[in-house]
Image (cartoon, rainbow, N blue to C red; front, side, top):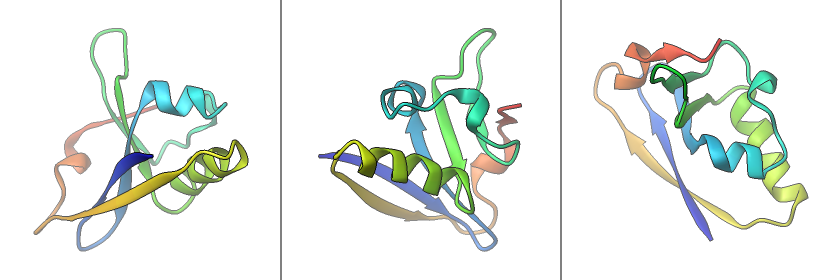
Length: 90
């Protein structure tokens, strides 16, 4: 069973997902909205932070469709989460 961190601040939430897990779920990066974030290097996006309204559900539904088991671990942030300072995926 894979554990995913669900980051929550006072205004929003994001699911931390390695890019390879998104791809293993059968999804492409281009399917993720402009409201999600990523830790971006020059040519690679190793970790995604999928926004909770659409992208998180898209990913979790894809995992469920494949019969994958997962657990969400909530991490609450005081003030704004660091994720807001990361680059947008698009």
